Image (tube, rainbow, N blue to C red; front, side, top):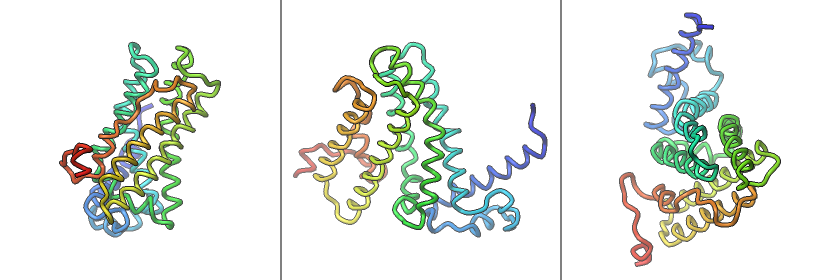
Length: 245
């Protein structure tokens, strides 16, 4: 059934608020952004804002949900549905595509650092994570089911394993954030080199164990791509020997 004019108007105004919030997160950072900033940007009243969202955290959660739905899923679903790719190829391309999208959104992600590290944002952080889990679990489970049919993965619980994978990735993300903050205060290229390499290999090893895949069969994240997060925008990745010089 086609949406009514009221529903379309509601969705349009809601998206305007999300667009404004995204601009402000880029320009000010999430912690510095206030609801009043959004009101001033759109020239709307506080009552109008609360008609759509009950808090700043609710805006951020909706923004993340929209980004995953409108930007990430259209990139990864064609991979999941490709008839000519094996499950391993799909999983590797899924991770590579998702990571490249995150790298393209680096400035936005870094603007949200305060959400991840501040104790007072724990509820917002958990809601954002739950939203991501809800959206990305189904395509991951579909890849896992294909892998079981092909005999390359061994599990009776594709949906639950997809959840486990996402939690492993969350742990890696938390570690990388801590490493990023530490590196900002005390740059240590050699530590970055060794830690990132170790964690990317550990990630593949953990995924293989969770999926029941043969050892060495998965290469999910390129360590060099991950190191880009520790460089200024547009920077090049130095070789290990230059980093040790």
